[in-house]
Length: 159
Image 1 (tube, rainbow, N blue to C red):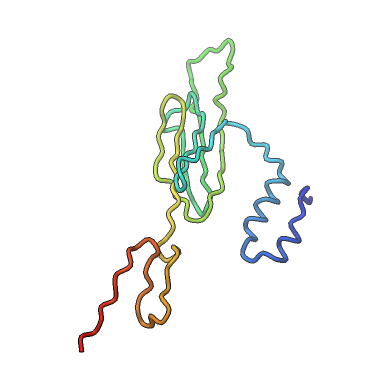
Image 2: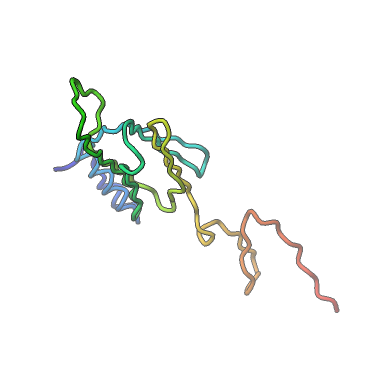
């Protein structure tokens, strides 16, 4: 089944974005029927994010968080209550699995469960080798300097 969007023109002219186009097409085709549990995505600053998942009624040991190959998976498996005699059960405690696609270099740095909210902290950590570098013209054999670093004056050779 094709999605409502045709990414063919973009695939012809964009190199290395196959994973992004596949993700968009798969997400559109599946209808993204996931809606439990509800969650918030928060941008804390340019390189920090937070995901808050409403998991009321779940204990720490009933929640599993896994990060593997750019996918963050949050699973909840509620334990059985043997002696409970419910007249009405309106609080949803069904098992769930939520998947979040993570961009390259996004790492989960922490998780906390407080007042029925699971808070996941994420940080974009760009490797030093991928940061922009300033290349001096005519500076053969010297190591390039990072843009943020302060430029040192060149020492002149004494005659």
